[in-house]
Image (cartoon, rainbow, N blue to C red; front, side, top):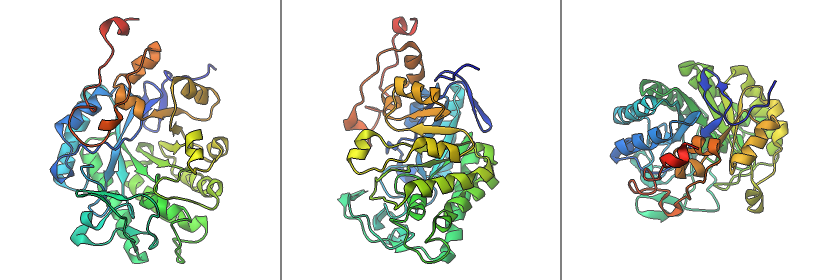
Length: 367
């Protein structure tokens, strides 16, 4: 049997991809008023439809789950209709797209919350670093309100309702955002979860909300159209865990019961480790999860090819490279030069640094 490469098809649950080059979820803050996806967003995603699978930018499951300006939602009829235009454009271009379901938890601000209330979290612990990006600029994080046990079924319902709206909007599936210091990650890791009820303490309790949300979303979509994303060694948004290998090994093992489309892991780069990230061995996590595995974070054509050859992953997600190169799979196929990223225009604004990155010229494309 030949070793798979980036251009070998792979099955991710119900989706048979044409290649193993995944577009990672990328917050761009280009939604319109009311967090409604725009025609510009439809153009942006359709330009990148050659990805084996597109995972959309993180999308709030409720107003409570919001926490930064101009990021889209999936909790109103107008937002759902806006996303319908995005999925239609991607499908017309021959692509597949999953919606990433997001609740920011404590990484929010009262200005975004219903009636100006406090952001919610597993425990009343404010991030010690960073600030909240609000409509009025950067503001200090507030100490969040700890969710009561009685409120947690409502959190699960937020995800289930959003998953149903994603289905109505024409997505091919959904990815649960359980990474980067947002609500589900806050429950999973013991640096942010100091609860003493059945949702805190040992890892089997801290993983409970993740598994309940997964079960609810699977009920809507079927397991073969649901993925989930983790950041095992990440410290973004002031995250930590006393034993990340044990924590993420446990939750990945428990997820096997669902037979999900995939798990999606953000691996720690050398630069991440210099900034406090923790090394969590990918081979160990690969053994715990029995379904398809996507890896992400800093991969290029060569390192992605290597991780596939070593059977440490089934597909590789690319972020910045896909922003700057809408035709990234073809550039990889030809080993062609890559556009440079315009970092000043990553977030907010209009088409500049968003939909104006050029595809290859016809002479290069014919190589």
